Amino acid sequence: MAQFGGTPMVIMTQPAAASKREWNSGLLSCCDDVGICCCGIFCLPCLGCQIAGSMDECCLCGTSMAMRTLVRTTYNISGSLCKDFCATAFCLPCSVCQIKREINYAR
Image 1: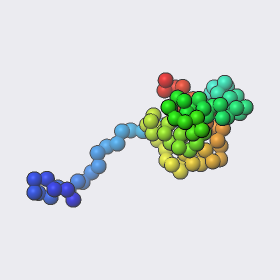
Image 2: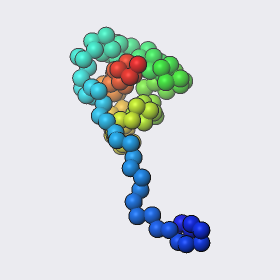
Image 3: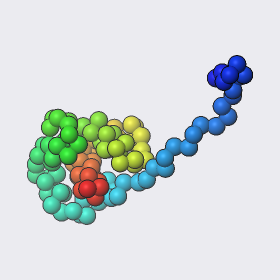
Image 4: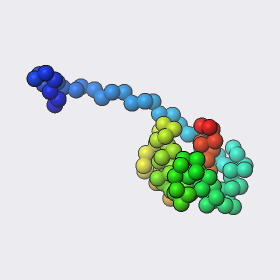
């Protein structure tokens, strides 16, 4: 309970959070950009470095769950840490391609 001028103030509702949006392309929408798809299949570390560079992060972080979470929060995309973990753990190339498509869309 907060105090305001000696009078207890009860907060009944939380301020509304900014509305979240969905990813611009699906996790399995690799054919939306064939160039990114090929790069993700044949040189995933290179694509990870491109992503990390776009987000001003270390090149080694480009394919991580942390990078997916950073992109998701930066671009106000709905999701959760659990979903980020599952996407990177079970379908890493698709996840990295989706992140790159999102960055390209945003810029």
